[in-house]
Amino acid sequence: MEHGGVVSKGMASDPSSSYQKIIIVAAIAAGVQFGWALQLSLLTPYVQQLGVSHTWSAFIWLCGPLSGLIVQPTVGYYSDRCTSRFGRRRPFIVAGSTFVATAVFLIGFAADIGHAVGDPLNKPTKPRAVAIFVVGFWVLDVANNMLQGPCRALLADMSCNNHKKMRMANGFFSFFMGVGNVLGYAAGSYNKLYKFLPFTLTKACDSYCANLKTCFLIDIVFLLLVTTFAVLMVSENQFDPLEIDEEATPFFGKLFGALKKLEKPMWLLLLVTALNWIGWFPFIMYDTDWMGLEVYGGKPKGSPEEVKFYDLGVRAGALGLMVNSFVLGFSALGIEPISRILGGLRWWWGIVNIIFTVCMGSTVVVTKVAERWRSVNGLRPPPLNVRAGAFSIFAILGIPLSVTFSVPFALASIFSSESDAGQGLSLGILNLFIVIPQFIVSAVSGPLDAAFGGGNLPAFVMGGIASFASAMCAMFVLPDPPPQSDVSLTMGGGH
Image (cartoon, rainbow, N blue to C red; front, side):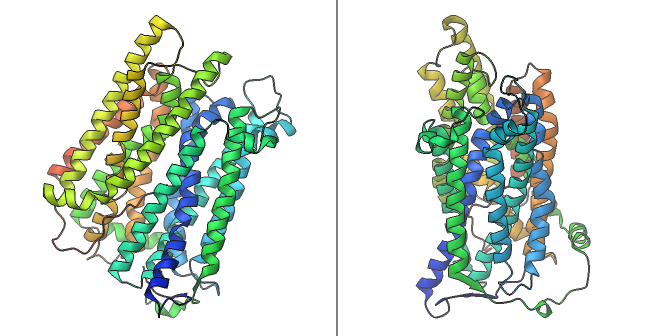
């Protein structure tokens, strides 16, 4: 990826102003991650309330891997070559933000729009609302991928190949990811938020739906504010295509050509990354559903009492994800010194994947204790030890998640430094081995859970096994990176 071509008012002559502009652009991550946190914590339960079964809800999540597979590398490639007078990155950032706002509006108002065009209120399945939700959900994933890549590329451009500035830019981006996560999970865990916008509660949209709608309306305003401020405060030079000296090869030809040139260390990194994400994706899809269904004993569709306890569990899960985000942020600061103590990145990556495996096994223990308690006491809130166990799992998982969002991107930068692929294509290739495992999990987890009774534990166990395999490969197969590499260990990530 070619850098440069950014002009920020006062940037060249005032270093402090330069960092101010970097912070302003990095703040876009908070708006993106706010919506992503809501998506992770609330949308699986919501789509089940619209009438989609637990098994089929997994297939809706296929859009994330699909858009990551196609949209992110494609947008990254063409934003490198965009000749708009507004710059290379800003047109994609503005378009991505606009599509995100449109998508979350469709998702939040799916039940109301579905009822307006013919969905009956007295039937459990609302096909028109589901169709609108699916369209909005898929547009949201495409827009998120369309927005994040150019935003990261703009930060790299603004750093002007200065490694210190690039580390600072990535650090700020990571910080605002944490801010967005905390805000999103906090909003998702507060079930009275809709009272600030009482018009969101309608005949077709109950309190849970109204709360989700309110959260997304806040996200629209927040994202558009930070994006507008960033694109107005930071300007880019118009890109001259003559700056790139390359053969006229189509994008996918370059991608496959880069795959052929990969060295063995990079292929091993891609293997460890793929296994790592097979481990993570079941929990990412179903963490709040696990809290509502297995820990609290509720159901998304059932008696009013069962729906109430399911909602309580989902809210508790969103609170757990907020705690997870705090731990993730602090853990990211310790990756580099801990890795140095242990003798290398691969050892810390392997250890945290073992921690993840233990946590997935612990979900089985917490679930069985909760079920045993309900068999004696009936449908009541779980006892303190069950809730403490569940929240401990969420908190501890912040440690391996910080490594998952950091180490693969740093190692990819090291291992690909000698290749001809360039930064954009190298990260695009890494992204392929993040999203392809998500396809596998999305296709397998729903039928797997249904085969064992409809709960989340089978997919969690599968994730734990994959994570253990990833740990063994990281510690005993993955080579150490070259010494004295000037690569910053800051969080990457996203879908």
